[in-house]
Amino acid sequence: MNQRIIKVDTAETTSLIFGAYDVNLRIIEDRFGVSLRNKSGEDGTDAIVIMGESMDAVNGAAAVVEYLRDMVRHAAEITDQSVRYVVDMIATGNAGELASIGSDCIFVTAKGKPVKAKTAGQSKYVDAIRKNTIVLGVGPAGTGKTFLAVAMAVKALKEKQVSRILLTRPAIEAGERLGFLPGDLLSKIDPYLRPLYDALGEMLGPETHQKLVEKGVIEVAPLAYMRGRTLDDAFIILDEAQNATPEQVKMFLTRLGFGSKVVVTGDLTQTDLPYGQRSGLATAIKILEGIDDIAIHYLSEKDVVRHHLVQKIILAYDAYDREQAAKKQQAESHRHDEDRRDHDHNRRESNRSTYRPKRND
Image: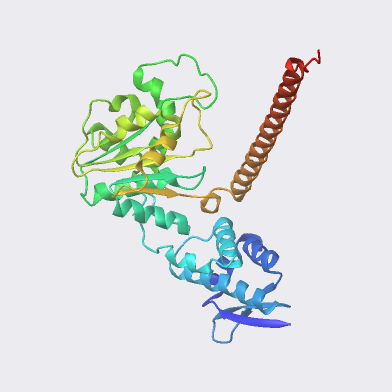
C-alpha cells in the first residue's frame, strides 16, 4: 500500500477541501481509486493522508489536494464543480493548464464576492479580452461567456478605460412564439434583455446599476437599435450572437469607434433562427479569423461552471448530434450508390434497346 501525507495548515482547511458531507473527498477517491483521511498533528497543524495500491494514483490525488490547499490559501471558493474540474485536468495529464488560471480578481461584486476565471479556458478568454479590441467568445451554456465579459466591462468602466457600457442581444424567442407583449416598448423588450440586467445587477448592486442606467453610462438595448450609431470610448457586448443574422453582426461590428472594445458571445449549438437561416456568429468566425487585434476564443464543456450535470448534458447532446450526422451521411452515401446503380442499369438497358445486329443478305 502506497501512501503520501500532505500538510494542509489547519483542520478548517481540511474541512474546506473535503467539502460539505465529504462530497469533495468522495470525488477524489472515486476518480483515483484511493482513500483519504485527515491526521491532526500535536502542533495544531493538520494533514491529509492518501493511500492507494497505485503510486501514480496516490500522486495524482496528492496533486489535487495540494492545488485545493492553495485555493484555500488564496481565499478562493471550493465547490464540487471546481473539484471535478481540477480532478479531471490532473487525471488526464493536463495539470500544466491549471497554472494558467490566474489568481487575479477581475472585479469584486456589490456583495463582496470576487469574480475570477475558474478554468484554464476562462482564464485565456479573459486574457484575450484584455489584449484585443474585438473578441468572439464561443462556447456552450454555463461557461461564463457573458458574465466574464460583463465583469471585464465593469472593470474597464471603474478604471476609466471607457466612459460607458453598452450591452445588446437579438430580440428573438427561444423556439416559441410569445405573441404580443403588454406595456410600452421598454416593457416589451425587457424579457429578452433580462439576463444582461441580472449580470449587471450582481456586479454593481441594484441601486448603483439603476443610477448608471439613468445617467446613460450603462445602456442595454436590442440589436436593432445599433444601426446608424458610432460608439466611441465604450465597452460593447453582443450576447446570444448565434441568433443574429450575418447582416446584423456586420452592422454591429462596424459600430466600433475610437477607444472602444467589443465582445461578441454565443453558442453555435443553440440557434433560434428560422430553419435555413445562417447564423451571423458562424459567418463572422469564418470571415474574421486571422485578422490582427481580433481574437476568436472557444470554450468547451470543461469550462462549464454551473451544476456538474450541465456538462454531462452538453456532452450527451454533442454525442447525439454526431450520431445523427453520421447516420445522415451514411444514408446519403447509400442513396448515392443506389442512384449510381440505377443510372448504370438504365444506361445498359438503353444500349441494349438501341443495338441492332447487322443482317447478312
